[in-house]
Image 1 (tube, helix red, strand yellow):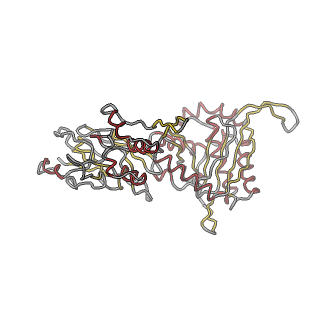
Image 2: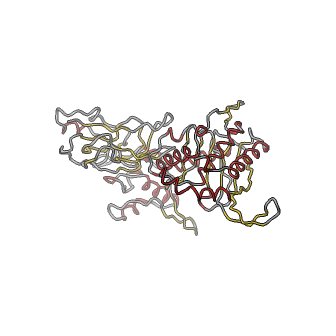
Length: 434
């Protein structure tokens, strides 16, 4: 028998911490191998973390909402399914835990306290009170003293003050009130909502704290706009022939590959061909140098319940239409099930986003740094058009937007790239590509 430590996983070279957003199991419960133990969030990705072993959970060392260093133990699991494990509150490992362990059981660092998990308020009468580093940091930023924290009734585990409690308290202070009495009047065991309704003057508002992913998206969008002078070239693309061809082959493709053949697959393929014809678009800027990428790693924006992620189809230039469809299906499934890794999200050289899936006609997206371009498609709609022979016809039309960094790509190249994507979409024969 042994007790195994589960540590905060490394989600990428640049990631040094992760935030525990949800525990799926409690101390004392049995967990199967590869069953989801918890969910974590970094500034780039949210992931579900499976259990590395089958056993019983001895202790969860950190409460939800705590940011923990990579490699630090976050849970202890006993590998004996029949072991008698006494449920313990979710908190930092205490030295007392070592006294209850059988002499033959082995746990690497099991008895060592985890000082980063909580902070103690040693001035509180009648014992200690614990605060997570997140709450301590928020309190410091908001100018809330430790003595004030003691007056807040916590809604977290064991009455601990959590992020929502502190935000409600700070919001109340901003109105000139005190949140301590209000907290005492709340029903025992109630938890603060994610969005806290507030009144500012005559306006009713709801304050909803950003999660890690939304904060990262906001930060990256601001940086991109400050870095790149964005220019947009827009054209309408006649998708009529492609729509008809897709209808002919989509059922056979689904039977063969188990994947729905979508218009995004065709657009991605067309973008790859255009990047081969205009390699300067597949580049980045480093200082005064232009770095032209020889490999095409194509990012594709995927909407998830928690925000937009951009997994990358690696070496897309070596794939045919079927290969692109397969890779995108794998990445989209991983995105929606929170299985994406940092490798899945890294290394993109150009990006595609499909706003047409939301019914949008035209959009002008933001470039994903350090790339110098992004392609966006709108919804495909039937419209009455005048053809080249001056006849009137109903055609399936779609707007395409090429957004590019004007530091490197001038209007001529930006428009030629768009024209290349348009040409490939209007002339390709899908039956020869799959």
